[in-house]
Image (cartoon, rainbow, N blue to C red; front, side, top):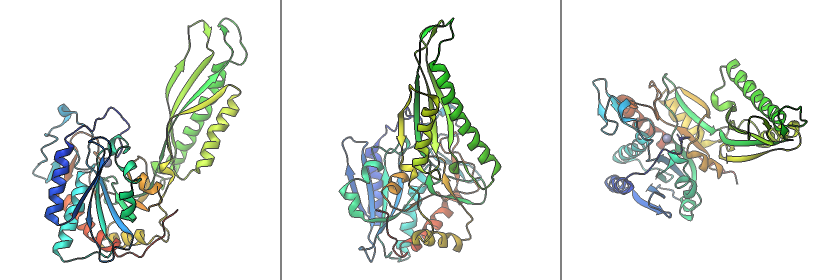
Length: 392
Ligand SMILES: [Zn+2]
């Protein structure tokens, strides 16, 4: 999952990762490809398993190779040694997010090849370098390259999130990230008077409106157990700025908000809401974008989607319980959905505490190995799914 903290560094030894991945492709017998952008940390790797009908739209299995840093002192285990305890729990950064998944893709393909399975559709396993920093130098750029277009991807899988209970989380959408700063301008003067039309009164309206939305969405989430975080819009006021001196009525004040907008809220309605806040607050109130990513508004339609049906069938055959939802965070998959490719977020991790980005992140060996079997079945099914048209 993408980290919100941009100070997280993905600086690492990419060359070592690239050559290790190349050795895996050679060993399994997959075609190894790499496209490099401007800097060493800007690239995308994909391994191709050619299908018997390569003219059909292909399947993309994506994972990111970067991880978030660790607070070493808070770990009981060496976070980069992948040590296993007596219960089979493997402790290491990336065991959940998401080195496990990248390896499971490859191991599933290795097994299927040994079994003599030949997919109808081609399968591409992609590895990108900077999901934790927003994917702007990896997946976001990759999907716009001619190399990517040539892959003719019809369906994608990427990371999901673990689940402490029996069911497996599957996401068909993500929330959009909107970070917005409202600025209110008003009359200034000595603070001993009742000055008309002050910035503070206008900003008060802005804050009230925004926090009303927060309250409404929070209540909606709490009153309906069928809703997850991804189905509501979260709002938080994160920065307040302004003021010159304690006895001067400020000519300008601002308040910034972090919103995670559910794709279930129509984008034009959401924009209208922000405009309405300004209008109600009065003249001299405007907003600017600190960060805006609308990629999350692109959801994958499940109804009538043969790839989804093939995926779901595979899960049913294995009697896996699915928890189908909108993912509350952001991942690289949004770039695929944004260009109209149906895609699901899924990590075959159940009965496991959610420890991505946390201390003592671990995955049990049985859960990990079962995940390989799960992908074998999924790959078998989705590579023989009927075609679905992509959204232009
Ligand atoms: Zn991740």
